[in-house]
Amino acid sequence: MRLFDDIAQYGSLAIVGLEKNTGKTETLNYILRHLDGCRRRIAITSIGIDGETVDAVTRTQKPEITIYPDMIFTTAEQFFLQKHFVAEILDISKEHTVLGRLVTARALTRGKVLLTGAADTFTLSKNIANNRRLGVDLTIVDGALSRLSLASPAVTDAMILATGAAFSSNIETLVRKTAFVCKLIELPLFTIDGITFDDEGRRLPLDTDTELRGVFCLADGHLEDLGVESALSIGNIDNDKVELIKRQKVIFVYGILSNRVIDFLIENGAAKGCTIVVKDFSTIFVTDDRYALFVRIGGSIVVLRKTRLVALTVNPTSPQGIVLNSEVLCQRLEEATGVRVVDVRRAEAEN
Image (cartoon, rainbow, N blue to C red; front, side, top):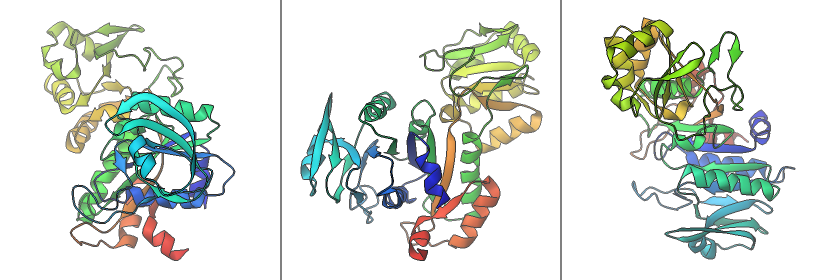
């Protein structure tokens, strides 16, 4: 299947659920089953705990994670000792979690495992880099609830987004909300004077990996600090800086982009023709209505680094037993997003 060919071309892939019980773990198992025996070396890790048989919040049944021979996995010591298959330890981290150190091992036989990995994206990036040193071609990251930050292009190369009836039991609402997230993921790269500031970090006006925070205006080829520590304080910008924004039309937001920035630009008559530049989609916390208003006025949001959305997966069944029409849901999502959509359970049944 073309989906698995697409997945296999990346060095790292995040699987993120928009809500609990949207089929994220089922998606992971589906991918691992189809990648078993491929010529690429696969590694798997997690942010948060995954592989439980029962969901810790909803108490619903969850599929366990199955590891196949020659796959590499990272989990905490406590869970490594609880596994019921043979594995060769490759590395033990110096960092400690509440469940012990992180153990990276290669499966020698097939079996099920509880996964818990890095607690933050910095440690996760180190884990992915370490996997590359171990000869891993593709690291798959099973993400915790709504942790879109792990799908940042600074962490993983590509992502799969899991959605479904648990996110909304109304197809119209589900499609609209999911399509908005996809729109943010696929925002265009920042360009100026015909130059693209690409997602490999070249020709960027600022290093996207710095801890710099605040709001800046691009003026005459350099970035003018607007004098606020974060976008949350944008209301403190003085009138001279507001006029600068109106003239120059490009602002860089380092940190979180929220409705507050959009509202400030609109209220001060600076939204029309204004381009907001952010590090990547994972820093955007703007609601779909404010985004739509900003775009309608003539504003735009662009990114310095862009991730690749490989596919959407859907779980049409909610924990409360609501079942949406899978065929209609997949078709509507594909029409709204232009992204490949897979109902994993239905795809498995048809094979």
